[in-house]
Image (cartoon, rainbow, N blue to C red; front, side):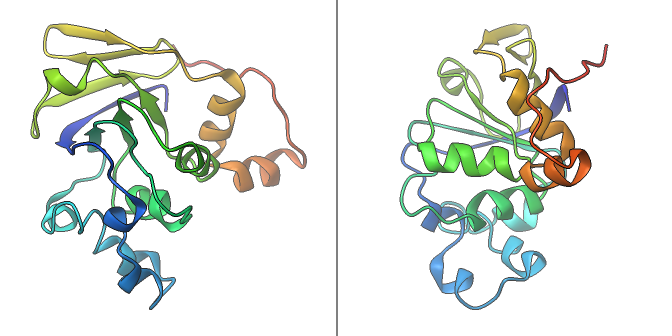
Length: 173
């Protein structure tokens, strides 16, 4: 989980939770396999059929705005996306994502330097994203959030530890 590498899917500003998972699907089923077939459908109708496990979404400002649908980050993760890098995130989407084990990175400089199909590598605890020969920096993920990510989300964190523990995670080399 410390290092993620994947193909970029690039989206613009103000990608709302309704674009991530349109309400017409969200209210019909809670089956994540079915919902994942419609991930990002409002922004790119072909996304769910083309995304591969480990791919990375790169977006503009205010990713995840709109309603506080908990299904939005779940659907992205279930579709195979390993992380989302954006200029900025809606705050409730940001926390919901970490709570379900989906890492988010705020790195404004990356957006104008990548295109869909490029490959990027994210080093979460180092605060680096590499694209080709360029390196972009972001504030590293705080230790308590890395612990939650490494445990698979907030619920799994609690199950594993029997309580909420905010210790520094073991860093892999």
